Each structure stands twice: as C-alpha cells, then as structure tokens.
Image 1 (tube, rainbow, N blue to C red):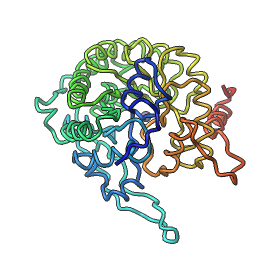
Image 2 (image 1 turned 90 degrees about the vertical axis):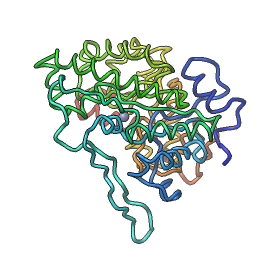
Image 3 (image 1 turned 180 degrees about the vertical axis):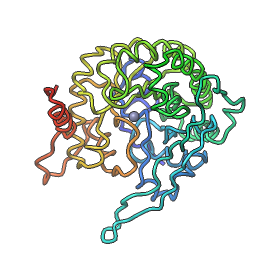
Length: 383
Ligand SMILES: [Zn+2]
C-alpha cells in the first residue's frame, strides 16, 4: 500500500519525531498519540474488537490504516486504556457488543464498545500491589509489543507510537477511581505509595515497546481537571513523572483528557517531550501558557469529528495552526463512530490541501462554540 502522508521531503517518521524534538520539519506533522481506529475501518478489514485488542496481527492491521489509508504520519497500535490493567490481572469486560446498522441507509450505528475493568477493583491497599514477573509475556502486553514489531517491519517510514498508562490511571483501574482519589485527602501516604510502586509498570512496558520498534511513547495519566486539582498534580504526580521520564529510553508524550491549562506549567517541568491536550482547553490560551513547549492536539472528538462535516473539521484545524499547536491530532482516542472522511479532513486541512464542498457555506469552529457554551453554563467568560 502507498502511504498518503503528503508529498514532502521527509518520511512521516522523521517529520513526527523531529516535530516532537523541536527539530526542523518539511511540513506540519499530523499524527495521533492515541487510537485512530474506526468502525468504518473495522468493517472494511473484517477485523474488529475485542480480538483487535489482544491479537497482534489484528491490532496491527487495524492500526496501520491511519498511515496507509487516512494519511497520518503515525500508527498507534493501542486502542484501549485497560491493557496495562488487564496484564496486571484485573478482570475485563471486553465489550463484545453486536453491530447495529441503520435499516434504510445501512450506516453503522454502533459496534463493539470499549472494554472496561469489571468491579470490584483487584486491590485495596498499596501492600497488595504485585507486579507479575511475566507482565510482558501476558496476552495484552504481548499483543501490543508484537503488533509494534509487525508494524516496524512493514512500515519503516511511519512514526510508530507506543502507549502506556501512567501510575495515576493504573491506580484508577486497580483500586477504583473513587477509592484512590478519596485518599488524596484522607491518606496522602497511601497515594504516594501506590504511585511509587506502579510507576515501574509504566517504565517497563514503555521500554519493551521502544525495543520492539516504537519511535515514541504516549504516557496517559488522567489527573484531569474535573477530578484533580492542579496542586494535586504538582504535589503527588509531578515528582513521580520526573522519576519516570528519564528511565524511558525514547521521547514521551503525556496525554491527559479534560481541562488542564492550570497544570500545564507543572507538566512542562515533568520531562515529557510534549503534552497531548483536550478540546476543553482553548488552543491559543494553551500555547500562550506553555510557550515553546510542544503541544499535540486538540481537534474535538465528540463535537467536530463525530458530529461535524469535513468543512467544520477544516475550520477547527486552521485555528489550531493559527494557535501554533506543534503537532495536529485529535484530542484523544477517537470514538470509533467518527467518519473516516473527517479524519482525512484533519490531514488535508493541516497540509493546506483541503478542498471544501462549495455547497457548504456555514462551516464553523464547533470546538469554540462548545467551549463558549461550557463557559456560559459555569458562569465564566469564554476564553
Ligand atoms: Zn484522553
């Protein structure tokens, strides 16, 4: 298959890695640190979840389409946040729901949903944390590492992005989010102990993926604004991130959903090469907050990519370019219902190659509209 990632003088791999490291690129890098797997691609390939979470060949087939078909610079063969927890021994609901189609149009309505950890959480106290000796040999870890090996061999010019959960997100999965978060107040030492033990999982899994051929690692750690204060990030997680980042043997992008502008100044001190940020944050304000620090994002998944037209996507991407966002990407793992046409529009608009339908004259920045609406509801002024 012929990669469609622009007609520049660099490979997608060089462009993406250079953009992360602050080196020159031939054009703007367009690549997602998180999943770009869609139902359309699953139907096209005959490959679907849940097998395409834990079978390396299926994972690789589904993941490579972002590069070979949609035109991104990257391939990210990791579609669901519970893989680390699964390999740690959590019980998983793999979400093998049936497909549903619109009877008149044949359009996909829904399909296999994202897996989740089944309650009750496996661990209660920090002393119960046990990292299995065979963590890297377990089915879920193996699937990711082996998919990266397949992709590295098949696509030497693609930027391959590995992914791990940070200790904060692993703690949500292994202890339950409420149970873990309540101890930020009740028993800070519990939280410090959990993070200090779980950080080894992130480092071990990241380095295995780099050794398998990944160019970059995304570390997702959801100390997000609606659950955690900026000072909590500073006091609990920042020192742990500062221990993790020097031990990972390649560039690392931090991913965190939700509102994060208030903690971005701390995030820039954590040792990550870049931060992958969400739509809740105005990209202009975010870029002003971090200065030269690299930002990846933040095209709206649930607003623009899911419900907008390609023309609306193009308007939002233009705004991200104006804001100076360093690498253009959706804000997070895309919902699988996102139409491929909208993902193609992300790439085309970023590269100045988007050709709008002349009949569409009312395209808008839907993410700005969403942020203004949220701000109005909370009584704040839109920024
Ligand atoms: Zn996210």
